[in-house]
Image 1: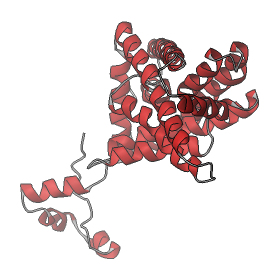
Image 2: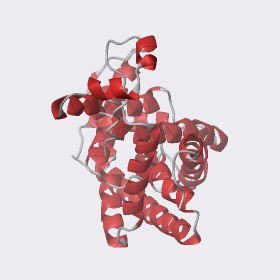
Image 3: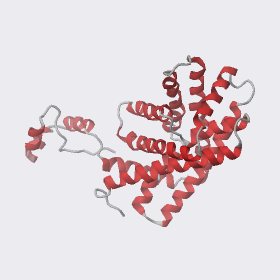
Image 4: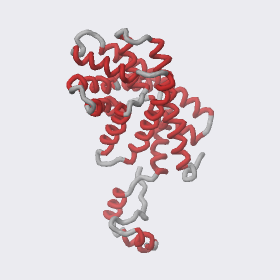
Length: 298
């Protein structure tokens, strides 16, 4: 959805001249339908319009049948494993140097790109997309729909992650050097106490929420670089993402290098709480505060 803002400033005009334009002069600045289309293309989406795009998307997600959510969530859980696999492949081929981690991190973006551009259900995306309709509606019915969607998508994501990580451990699926790298990458991702995992999960939730907020405003293929840069930052900075991390924790459980109880209590639950806190309690509420005086709450 585009906002046809007839008052958009002309490129190349100084701020003083832009402020002095009266309404009639502004109308004269757009002389034809072609000119108007160029102004529209050059203008940015306002925060209000970005909010409305995401809110409507969230409304649609809340209305989807459970079966659709399950299959979409399973697909996302399986395909997010491509992030871990690609990162491990790069690690297995790169020398042991300090900068290698930065290159490996590019592989982490692959699974997120497949899932996000494929419009699959990823739990951490829903910490903002489906929360905005609840914040706007403020009804028990909408809240229950949100909790239903969260529960279904989270379980489906985790089942997909467990299946994918188990498949990767089967004989002959990956080369021995890649398997060694997979285990090393997984250990690095899940290390830490419960408190540490909660704290480092909050920025990841914030980043994914910011990614969802930015995407409607990207143009001309820019979304590819936005997704790549922000998801790369998650792993390069050592933050924790509950779904991608479930592939890594699951792989370690499958090969016997991590106990199931530790994977659940020290890694999964704290990271889940941190992602939700960063994506919902922090980013979504900040976004709502930015636009609530500009939108009509029904």
